[in-house]
Length: 454
Image (tube, rainbow, N blue to C red; front, top):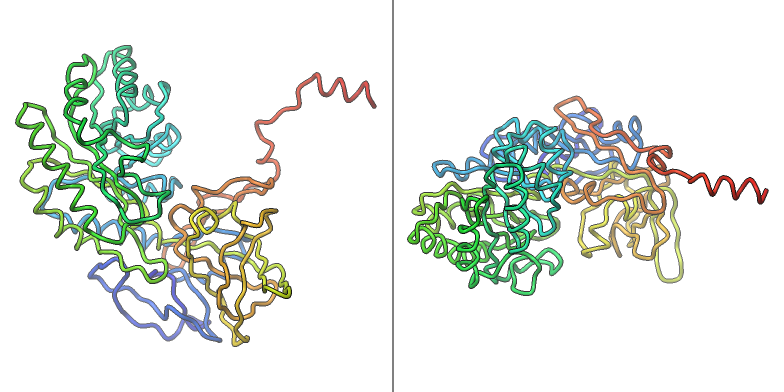
């Protein structure tokens, strides 16, 4: 996390070094671990300042990191026709999406809401791909009206639905079939999507028959092949194994006269949360170029976590400390409704003191205020004993953080902030209690019953 660094309280003691995504340009940074007398900065802004002025919990994103990671990924595939479609499921704030679209990026969307956000952020419709197993007719119509690059088709019935909507609108729907290569992505089972038992795509053995059915429909045009085998991949071999199967399918389709212009490689490249050693984009590029470069197709990439994950953190405030015969607990104001990954995936997120101290170390669960035993951000974590009112930073939270948050326990969702150099900008205001009930109504009959019973 190259732009989340410890500096002296006045910002002294900096050095130049590289960055976590493999870019060649240096970045001004301090230390990744802090000590008393220092504090944690995002670029040129102390996180304690944001926490005091905006409140907590708050998501903080580094613009510098977001854009650098995009450029590193883009440059890795220099010389091959390609489009980078940011996976908006990772982080759909329109300011984040705008940062990528301004660099020429597109969007991978999986809902009408994400399509709306992408267009709102200025993404060119011709750089939007639409995946997901449950597209509604209303969503299909919106995408066709916008003029997106293509739909990634998940099932035969979905294909027929798209053909019907396109016919009604008098347009041709550009499509790719999502093929399931039955390759183990070697990741958490909840985010593995390329096995036969998963709900996504059509089996690669049945793909040729499905393509022939698609080609016979009057209102769709086959233009590509799509695959996506999972998320948080830390090895290259699953990419290569799946793409060899996809490339062979592309050759067979081309030999039969199908106009395959796009190979959608999907996304899923992982990041470091703890001790993982995921491949750099340049390493991925070196591995898959020989598999795909002779197909004469434009490659579509759907990176999400690798662009945004280490560009953000969640800042939370310590409320209370509690010790039992079995456990120490640090109770903070961010809960599983703000960041559900530790609860849902047993995921690890590093937790740092925003202003380090020399307090003694102990082991504690970092938990939130939600009324669930599963409400935790860390289990049995070694850390220095914090004081109530201190700020903690939950790292690597720029992807699948806010997008997976909820209003459970009627908690307003957190604010989001983007830092650029020495300034910060609120890119999503904190919800208030009125936001919680907006759109809700008490029907008249209940008011009447209450009046009668009073």
